[in-house]
Image 1 (cartoon, rainbow, N blue to C red):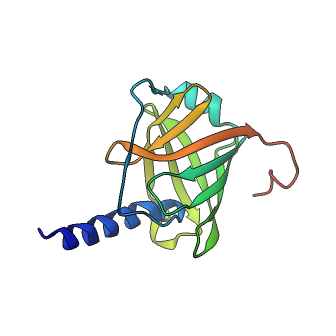
Image 2 (image 1 turned 90 degrees about the vertical axis):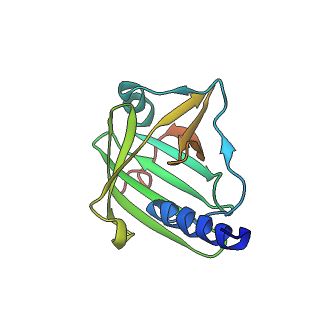
Length: 153
């Protein structure tokens, strides 16, 4: 396959994968998972992501990011942004088989109702989500949800 065709195919696949959270995707470098990153267990994911505000920075995207809210009752809301747009995705989450699973309810009609599960890793205080190729998708900084605005659906 010619290099330009391979780049176009990679960009298309990456963009399709990134659609689940509304982020644009970069057809270039992939950030490898650090060797000392530790995969979280199901119970560790529940403990870490229940009722938190998550500032996510996409590593396999074009400068995109999101503020995600992971509620203890299983709801989530993602307020994403890129250089070309922004939006809100809502749905439900759970932890299973040492992965965080999401089902989108609104915001991305083509992804609604489909459960997708991804492993979460931790390195010190940094959390990382991983894409299907095993590279870092996002870097996540967690803080408690503590305002009425954070708790809206």
